Image 1 (cartoon, rainbow, N blue to C red):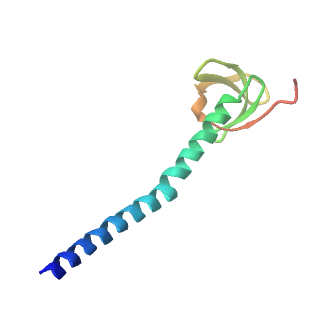
Image 2 (image 1 turned 90 degrees about the vertical axis):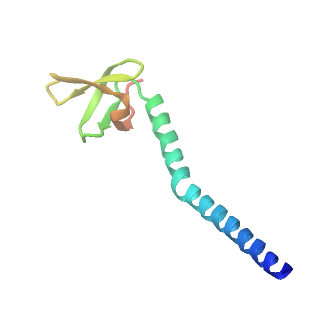
Amino acid sequence: MSGILLLGSNNMVFWVVYILFFGGLIYFMAYRPQKKQKQQQEQLLASIAIGDSVLTTAGFYGVIIDMTEDTVIVEFGNNKNCRIPMQKAAIVQVEKSDAV
């Protein structure tokens, strides 16, 4: 009878280790890269300044002409007549201006 109990407890230990292993695997393959990408996006948004050239999520290139805490006004085109306010989160790439 004690052999049956030992077999059952070994089986339980196996399943606990199995679940912990795959839980850790999911963490390192899914959650951790997303967290790292989010940190990079936050650093990018914190570094933008007026005059920087930006690429938006819609694929448009423009220049930041004004900004507040969570919005920016981006100027598009060569004639400088198209100014669109948008969320900072819509910016995916920043190229710093040469003017200091």
